[in-house]
Picture 1: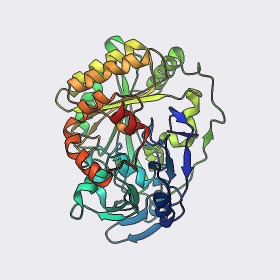
Picture 2: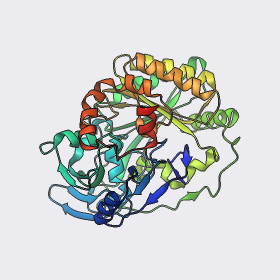
Picture 3: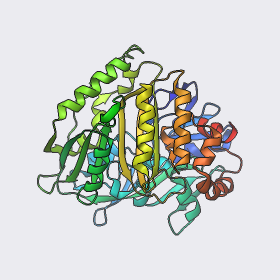
Picture 4: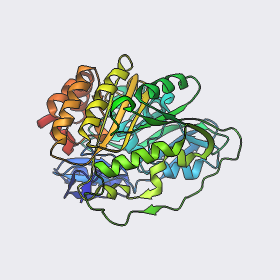
Length: 434
């Protein structure tokens, strides 16, 4: 079974696990089926699924090839995970400049999705990649950076694997003097206050994230819990493994429902208090859900969908307010909903722009598809787009509206390097042929 992290969709598919680059050359030379490289399987939706060809699991291509300890540049293969990097380099005083919400993502996957995270000032993964190499559809390898083959270099970020198989990457790490994060947690009474606190925190705090209640309507709609943080300067940088809580089986589909979500949201909002400040271990702050193995099983065997969009800064509050009003009225939103600022990314197909991103999880439901189409219309009308790494259902028509400007630059490059569509996915077929 091949699936995204959210278990939706899940399909039967062929998987190939290369242990060396030569295995990939042999695969491309001997197989006429389409190919898609997969990393840690932590993206959502159908972006990392190829149900009509070969799914290349790259996690065995996980060697760290070289580290420049003076400049902090790591040269590693695509299958190295963010956890691998943290385990090795936090004790040496280095950490990632940009990280998504899970340490189990691979470097190759972070490039393909152009991952972003709580460190909104840093932008996206693209800003800190010095170069990479790709295997093309004929088995040849191209090395690229911002000066050599820049067209395919920038088209690979956010390109969801459609330009080639990412083989290795050179990443700029950042120097740290402690493995602690100074975290301030603030209870916000409504969406307006969430935006106000985020705005006032932009100059003073490097990291920011705001959880929202996806069910609360009325004057307190958008009530949330905001976290803002900076690195600490005291305390040695150490890496420690934490014991995981396991969800051993899929819970019944009715476990996540209107009543359980409302109860959780109310309890979580109340538990924080008005404001508190503490020092937290950095891995707990960046990857809070990684301590729960297979947490997606809480949603049941049907899995869940996440809707994540970004809109420009001008009018962002009004747009998020409009979307949240639709979501709260539907009562279909789940326990995970969030809003945070983003900065424009350099990748051609990258998701981040100067604006705000809003994300919310949903259980599959017959009423959901119309709701999400409605959200698409609001996003398009306000100059925004959905995050392809989280998507499983946006229509080809709406996709082209959201990404119209970037597609004009990206599509000629994709056709140049992947003219026979040897690299393909369920998402590509949906967005291009649907």
